[in-house]
Image (cartoon, rainbow, N blue to C red; front, side, top):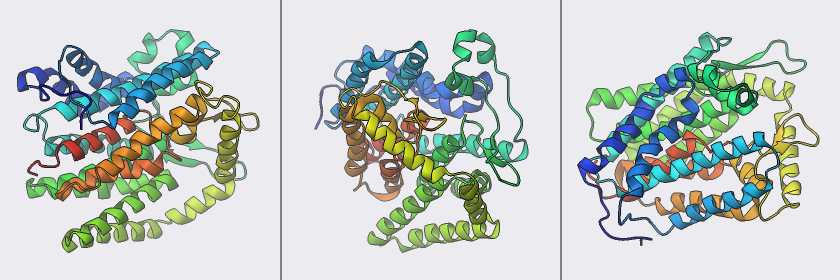
Length: 418
């Protein structure tokens, strides 16, 4: 079912420039990162596409996309609750991220498979994963390095004084945390992103693209290369001590293995299960679980998160329809409410209506893509993972693009030869 019907597909000539912007934004991510524009990759990819869509007649959309359009409209209404220019900056950046993901979803939904086949898009995100893994190793080997970027030099002091903007334009290789009582600091890779959790969420969401690509009809060296890349990425992944990433990957792989087994694809199930077992054994051998336990002991992340979640819910009751417009400082902790998971961010910022619309669309993507054939099952795993990752991860940047792209491809390319 579609919201609009007529002339659904773009021609190759019409889609050429938008396709290049989409490919270059993620294939050329290191260049954007060095320029201080890594946090704007989704916007850079979407801007030329939006111009094409504005002048395109008869765009076809699935009925479920109405949830996202309503969500975007609701966030605009919630902007009436903002009270400072600094919070307006954060609101605008998040809105552009939400809008960029929507633009890329619409484009891929209407783009002909011959122009952007699922295999090519998965290959693009395997390349993106390569940059993520390299950045992780930079964080492991050179954790105290940070970069002064051209964007940082160009921005006025008023914008750079915003901590969120500063983290985006002044990239560092790792987060170095000094929990009280710990014998030594925890060094957690973050490059090419601002935060370690952002690195972990990208690695978790990109791994299924690599598995999908390896399951397609590609040369053996590319197939094994994609799997080797995920395996190589486990070293910086373990160094992040990121429990949410481990949980997401573990659940996603087990879920996909079960789906493959039900389809009778025992070889693939066994291969994936063996990879998971090898990863767990490697983590145990490297003492990763002991380090995670030590971090939990010295850093009260569990109790802090629980306290923030409770505060986010209680304070949302003060403005249940429109929310607060953006995160606000906690009343009890030195952190902002609405920054420890997309679920809580949306609830606190846009109220319970915005939360229902946001989650409704993510969960619709997961449900709508559940019966895709062949290797595309791995693309379904991405929105499936996002449907529970949103409780402890932020999904408002290029992570959201990964979820939307996977959902659009899984549904619209279901009949494509892979």
